[in-house]
Length: 244
Image (cartoon, rainbow, N blue to C red; front, side, top):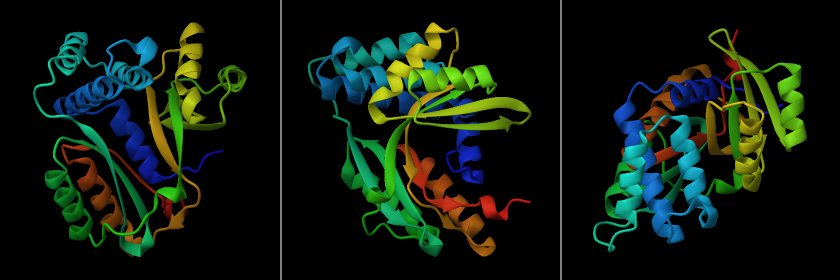
């Protein structure tokens, strides 16, 4: 089973039930626009990046008219700013590795904001850590019974994690990077609508966080995620050993 941590629970809850809808929608629309420009097409049949971005937006119930306008703007004459994906790497207190994915039209704005969030909470944006993480697909379902797990394995899941979210059953289905969309469509063909379909980065090895450093790490991760240009934040912090 994949590693389980308090931060992963926070991430899941945030992804499934984000009460800051404006920020959530704007980040999805930015990802859609970037995928259209990068792939040079608004047709999902020939643009895998767009297909992934639309799948993520669908799980967060982004309005279809907002999506349509974002695609139209991205397919326009090229006027306006171009978004690009940038990855920032660094460390938090206690040597925790942190990986930040951002979409930005201005690196000179985004990099200082990310660097400030690191330093304000005792971290630093230096050193490569991407090699510590594996890029995967993550599909979350609201059923975790044996039949659902067997279906996930049949569809090609690489790993499963069973848990409860405030008393509700959940199943995290991890896939290889290229298999996320085919597997999510396989679930839909069997009448399972995923709660979450997104790419994730999983730490190959985790590092235990001390009691004294827990709040510092969590505040840094939350500060990074709250930045407008930041799409996702990952760390190899393990808080499981602190749970009762």
